[in-house]
Image 1: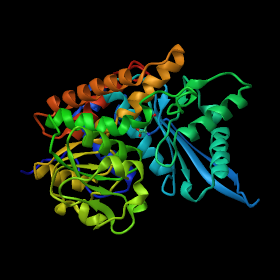
Image 2: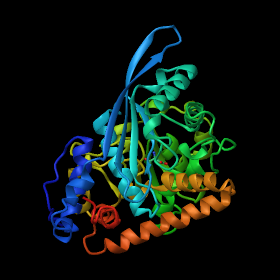
Image 3: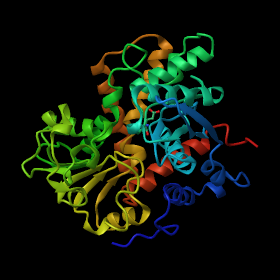
Length: 420
Ligand code: GLU
């Protein structure tokens, strides 16, 4: 099957890749002819605001390191800006712009009243001590406090940050604003400090709910998961508990050896989840991603499946737990091979969906129990998956469909139409 594309699908930077998918959807939704002279296509592609700040970090040995942090506020047509903060060596401004744009589309597709944003700090958090991490987290919030706020722009965890980092950030923000209690300034906080049950598991569990909606019962389905961080580990656990056979887990940082664990009969995910560092890789990471399986869940980083390895991928279904794991040529090639691809802005929306539940609980001052949250998450994930799948019947491209639904919602919001 050959797919006719509206624009050329070539391998680019992460931002170019996101914009490539977006541009095709802008063309498909006929925005420019539906809203003449408003230049909506360009207006929804370019972020509202991109800020970079220098952040100095006092190291434990007394020396000072200068780091660059950024916050990109992409679009707030549907509500306050929302999106995580990534601490990673690659988290520069361009990267953060790509991720912020995807947050806009993720929130719109999920029908939650948020816009899209993202933060980045160019640093390897693994080399920082606990106290250095605390100082840099507080330094980040100090640098960006004036553009953030519980009804303005609400950060959350992403790669390299976690609930503890969110707790430091909330505390620092409240200090800056003279002790005004502001739990809703960040989501993904620890339970007991304004956090929500189920937030840590949310993205990984959401990936599994999405898979269930597309494939039905997961019992005995073979699954390969790339990345055993917060997303991949929780996806593996829930899939395993539902009777799926997780045959490979890939994470060179954790497992050593070749970087991947493999067992054709299914891995003991419960044990691996408890002590991942006790397990030694018995397969090369680049081979494991190509194993024949029912479902491949890339839950690591962007562009992991690209023109270089796309021809070796043997999965029938790909559920994107990570943001941007497939480059445009890989996406196109695999769709032509009839692989079902659940796009990131749909498949990994579970995190921001439970962030929304957390923000609501903070506003109400009333907290919900874990089972209520997980069942609301399940309903929402299955609804957005079903909606996208049904609309995609004609073009069989769920990514193009997901972007198109989201773009329509954002473009139709009142402050675009008629705004000058
Ligand atoms: N960092 C997560 C994402 O990429 C969650 C963002 C949030 O909860 O605001 O979707």
